[in-house]
Image 1 (cartoon, helix red, strand yellow):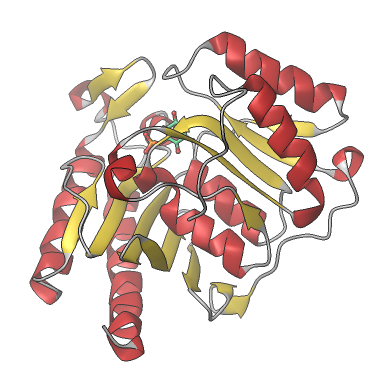
Image 2: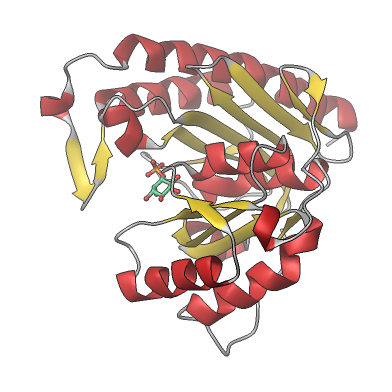
Length: 272
Ligand code: LIP
């Protein structure tokens, strides 16, 4: 696959993300909650999730029939050329009328993310990254913040009922003990985009899926941040802990996450 082939996909996916965002705006705050399906505690699927999932699959499969597609609502399998999609990341926020959610689209070749797009349809901000070509918000270059240390840092520490509350409390205790400010905003894609453009200094969560984070992790890397990556291959379909931050915070946050993690004492994850 040539650079031009990837560029074509990168630009096509941006158009798709904007159209998907328009679908989300149409449904947002409309009284459809009754039709939501519950996948787990605080883990709904809305009509908008399903409609956008379908729309993106149709668009991408139509334009690039040979590519593989993996989405949160339809699933899929690892492939050499693979789209990894979350139609609405931050669905609980979306379902409750909280304006903090995004469409997330990543394109990967041989287990390496080459293009990442996170579109926030409420603020109409599109975050884009092409591997080796930098990261942008609405076309303007973005960089992570130059953080001094924990006393100067905000971390988005995500939580879900997929992992024991005790591990999360250990993480939060560690963050507060080291002097961090922390938030829990409910969308990994939005958290990683906020990190990439310098609004926060770190994002971590003990259990996430590839579709929540692949696009956002590339944004952070191309904006000069550090990430602990996410495994590809069979690991693409499993839950994994995720850490991304400004370079100054890497050691401190890696230590806190390892201390809190069920993996503590085991070897760290391979890079993206
Ligand atoms: C969400 C993640 C968030 C996590 C939520 C949920 P979804 O993804 O972005 O970080 O805390 O539990 O997994 O389900 O809205 O696509």
